[in-house]
Amino acid sequence: MSIKYTKEHEWIRVDGKTAVVGISDYAQKQLGEIVFVELPAAGKNLDKGAEAAVIESVKAASEVYAPASGAVTEVNGALDGAPGKVNADAMGDGWLFKMTLRDAGEIDGLMDADQYAAYVKGLD
Amino acid sequence: MPPPAGRKAPPQFWETYVTDADARDLKTTPLDALHRERGAKMVPFAGYAMPVHYQGGIIKEHLHTRAQASLFDVSHMGQAHLLGDDAAAALETLVPGDIAGLGKGKSRYTVLTNDKGGIIDDLMVTNCGTHFFIVVNAACKKRDFAHIRKSIGKRAKLKVLRDRALIALQGPAAAAVLWRFVPAARHMMFMTAETFKLGDIACFVTRSGYTGEDGYEISLAAKDAENVVRLLLGEVEVMAAGLGARDSLRLEAGLCLYGSDIDAGTTPVEAGLEWVIGKRRREQGGFPGADIILGQLKGGAPRRRVGLRPDGKAPARAHTPIQDKDGNLIGEVTSGGYGPTVGGPIAMGYVKTAFAAPDTPVNLMVRDKALPGRVAKLPFVAQRYFNT
Image (tube, rainbow over all chains, first blue to last red; front, side, top):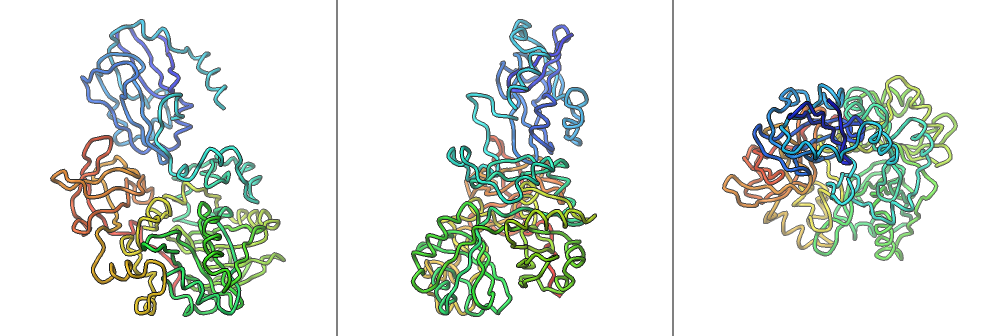
């Protein structure tokens, strides 16, 4: 089980043929206070890079893209009443949705934690 | 999320006026060092590096302003004096407000109009006896001042104040805080002005603001601004707040943001600002676009600015199309987001006049989906000005 990151600041934690998706702690800090999360419907088929969710902060609406291709199996319903969980725990309780993986190889091109940390450092 | 290369991020509200040239060569206010010391997130706004929020974040600053008092740096705004015996009459040729009838020590909100009745800018005018004190929007100030000079420069002298700061102390505790330094300020009425010494620093104070709360706007020499701000921030009730909270506070209070809710294509009547047109001016006209504006006063305007409440939790932001329940386009959102005091999404926009009554059901087309909502009475949060 490993966590990978996209350049668009999503994370994906792969566990066999399924994965959990969220946004990084860096992303939640950049967004500021999150007031609404629009999640995909369970069963929805996503292509890698497609718009999967929308996060509304006080400042702006931001799209979350699918880090890999597959079908949504479950969404984090707790965010409906408490979107601030994404701020409080972006890497844990603030996860967005779970999905199956159509092609596990798609994950290989993503960044690991060290690579992502270096990438984020370069952005500031 | 930070915009990834090649993808277009939706504009954020403070980016409305930012051009590449602005971003390359940002001006700073006299409080720039203090903002950075306090950990502000600085963003480009109207050519200035401005704090959008400090460490606590926008919601905390917003709620604190409604509960106690916050200090805002608005030094980017344009300040000027208009001098000369003919200044009031001259200014009246540019605005529909009653300026000649504005008493000494009184402030008035008004608008510069164009020949089509559109709004060039909104501004505050204060009668200082020997001159008028004018405050205009940062993004418009160059154009406004050029317009005023070109139009009435022979009748009145416009002196732009370049070495001044402007700060706003806003919130229900503002009066108690300022009282400790300037006892007389407590008894000022809303929309009045006085000059005080705060310590040994001369301050031009108006009881006014842009949050819907009681409060003051203080104009003072740039070199003194940091000292005064440190004094005020030293009071237990006062928190520093940025442009983010300023925007959500004014939206809840139903106040217009120039460039979003009003612009050269909207008239005061469409914007629901009929009250800025003085009684005498309604009879006499004599301001740009008077025929159109006075015609709309009598016959109605084709569209109206209204409040909007989405039924759900998703915000409807600026440029969201508004449809009726049959799917016909009836207008557009001009400001929208989350209202921290309301505790949910709020917006303002223009709809065809037939749909402007409160509680009219509408659909807000967010990301091509119809979010049900209703026309709502403005303001969303009652204004609490000091009038008694």
